[in-house]
Length: 478
Ligand code: ARG
Image (cartoon, rainbow, N blue to C red):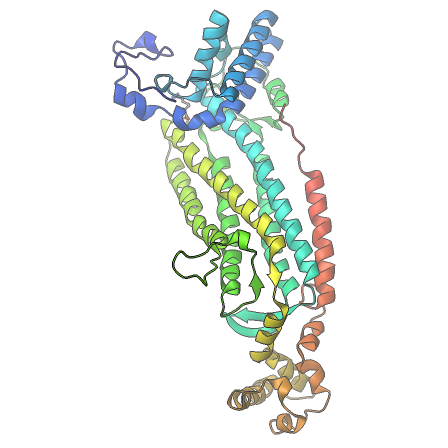
């Protein structure tokens, strides 16, 4: 791919001022083409709009514009065909493409860079690129949300233990648990679309830092590229990468959420919990222990969270203390951003494929809820309804649980006489609240775990998702 520069390579773009060629190591050290070629498509997209605008305001003739657009088509075709020869001596994606354009169409190719700088060019490329990638991430996030909502609806009646401190606390429905995951992702989705608004602003026209003396029309360029508006300040436009940091902060929060879900999937597939089954295609075996079926996919998602956090910290630190305006430091924004993106996309795909395939082992979940005295709070609430002070009720139930542990009986397994040993206010109707079904059904308010509430919440989630994806910016990639 990239050829090492020869010792006499002099970069054409600034050769005029220099009396000796760039040191070969320095050329390699300062080059970004090995990674920023990922921006090639968007670099060409930006150049097309720039040339079109320049012709519109009379800086380029129509013939010059047409030659540039046709030349860019050819360059793009070479890149897509994999025949384009990237050169480290030409430093980055921008100069590689421009040099190839000039090879093809001659001197007119050199006019493309009129009224712009690589500083506003690279900022534009990253924004165009990131905007497209955000749309891909948003679509995958929507697919995962749909899968979660459907599974939650299906499991609205399935009872499992709810935990605090990972100790059995109260019975909940599996659907309710899944909708808790969904809420996390719904907020991530909002954060992503909010970030997109700040990405979708045009730097071109800022030129190197101060703007340009040519009679450019930045509104035309913005419209051609589907940006909401031109960036307000040229110094800021070429220098800040907060939009990329913001995306990486979104990705970090998303991965933090996916790591929590992963952790639960890993626990639930263990023999100790045995709450769910993950189909074999999402698992791997052990080369030495024949019985093993390992939940590698959730484990790996959990593990990948660390690298995304690392990229966020790296980018924040990269931007820290940079004086205005552009500094070469910013070339370091790309690799962490690209990797955060790829990681987020891969992890979302893994989850969107896997979630609909989760098989709940309802009997095991129910048994775990039954064994863990998960209706103890319900018994306390029952006593309070019969006039016992809450603190006393807590004490009474504590004694009943202690008895249950020694007699190996859940509260609902005890006879009325056994229960009445702890409080005389207990009557036959206590068994309505001590059953798991009674316990979850009683939490029948918005946000509660009752099956009817879960079904209603799933319906609201479906509607909110439909509204969000309908108002999502359509492909404004022109
Ligand atoms: N490769 C550079 C980057 O990624 C492009 C901008 C370079 N500008 C400059 N004046 N050296 O930031």
